[in-house]
Length: 116
Image (tube, rainbow, N blue to C red):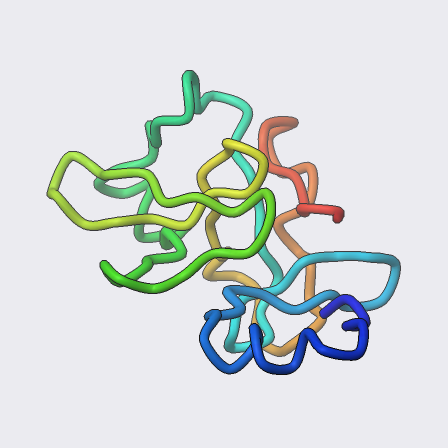
């Protein structure tokens, strides 16, 4: 999470922080697990469903949650909302077992850790 300026604490109380920053500005979800983007996603829409979504679970959002700068929500085919950063839908990797793992980085040449 970025450092906040004095006076921003009030805004923080009313704003949901969907992610954290780890290590070299690597983004992680609220659960501390690494977030990824998928090169095959186009136009801000997810193309990862079925078996893909089992290996790469989408980072789901809830209607009404507030977003920080560069964060949006995209609607999935099933109607669920998924977090997106800089317009790109976000995913976890099922192969990551603990906070800070990034075993999915560069898999297939199409999955990448999100750097802030």
